Length: 208
Image 1 (cartoon, rainbow, N blue to C red):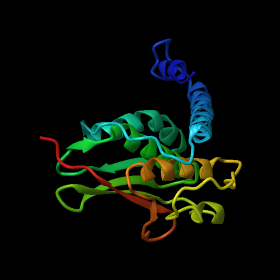
Image 2: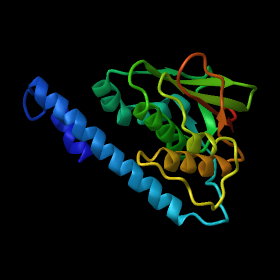
Image 3: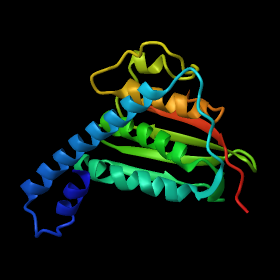
Image 4: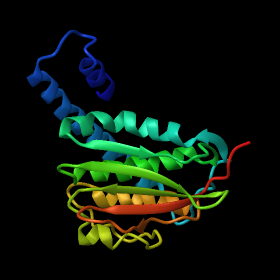
């Protein structure tokens, strides 16, 4: 569904009216949300008390990983009139686990898009030293509700998650468990003004 909607939006089947563009934007957002919720629910259901061993670290582009996430979310941001901002590291080629990083960024930015009516969603990468990198996802949205806020900073467990109708806590649960596999955790960062700022650190040595 997402591929077909994307092809229609690109104009490959002919020019679209403004009403058709708006309708396709709504369809894309709905299809993406169903896809993301299903993927997260299945992954959470498959997880056990013992975390699976992480894959062998590989060399990858941090900015390239963001471009993959942005390609999926740009249609939703455009339909809502929101701006996606990225500030990558000076050393872009790193050694780590790009699939886990992509999963975490996808869920955090998706949540930010859901709860931001106007403004921006920013993803910034700060190099703490030669090996450690801090990722920060901030938005100008409505902020975290109590069930979601209670999950930040705590280690993942087998507790019954307080699922909200919008699936925010499900995405946060996936992020917590994915980061735990890399000995990291999600933290609440400082945010000036309204919105939410979530942070996490990863060990990503520069690739040679």
